[in-house]
Length: 135
Image (cartoon, one colour):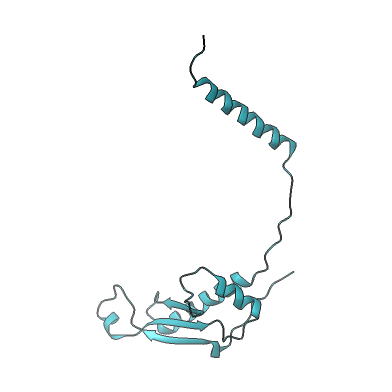
């Protein structure tokens, strides 16, 4: 079974150009090359189950209002930062949208039970030797 992540529409994503932080010399003070991507989860065109999973995420990029904010400033090009931010958003959505594999219950093997009990008895002997010596 292959999985295809949902495709975002341009109207769901809002880009804002900002000045990048950090080193960059004189260029960093003049050019707004960093990008803030804002994605409102509730008003997006994503399926409901993906929206619920995104809103339930304990991630610092998701605000209380249900907006994902991603800051991209790795390159000096605003267009490349836009592409990077969009790729990170798509990666986040794809990660949440993956179906969870159901866990099948298994029983411990006979060998693992035996090893566990042997380890417990050895540990018990070590602890018994720590006690007071009885004459």
